[in-house]
Image (tube, rainbow, N blue to C red; front, top):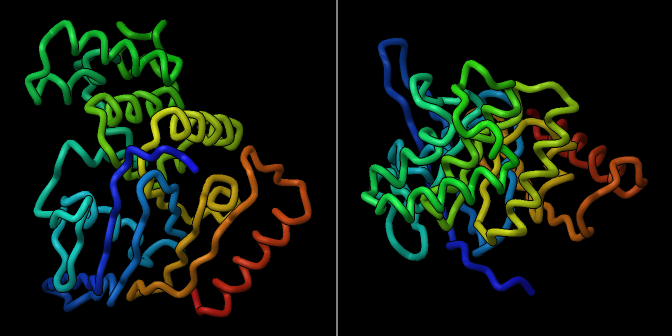
Length: 255
């Protein structure tokens, strides 16, 4: 049993409606799930099923139309440094160096200079970018930019990491490497992870548990637990069978 330091996430009866000039869109309907401290949970589904909306609601960037979201028993009322978020788009400040990007959160929180420098160096070591501390984002590859984004999210030492298809814009080789690095970081830091993807193989490779959302409006259609130890060999029969099983369940749910 892991000595977890992450925080519990509870989503209870959450719906999200968007009203616009072209009409009303219901992105999520009556979604409920609980993520235990230190658990790695992936929300799986195709584009448009509301999985990014769900992550934004948990992050506090948006508010649910109905229902409740709590973190460590406290209602989510807006963004909080305790919930580090990494998006598919890099969102790095181009005028700041790598170390300045990673240190942005601690600066905003008023962390003392010496402590901040130590924390930034620790995060750069963790993601393997110490040699690029003084580089600017334009000098980095896509995979390196994503690692900076992850280091920046971790720099404020959040209990929770929210990851929205963070590897979707890199090539397959880089994606596999980043997946391995993310698992190493997760094991080292004991964060609670909520990961969003439409890639079934990625979900099976990374997750303790997979939550499958239906098409619009997004609803929880299926939950599956992955008990095999990591790293997971994608060529093993159990892995192939699990991917195929999830694919057919998704297909049957009309996604």
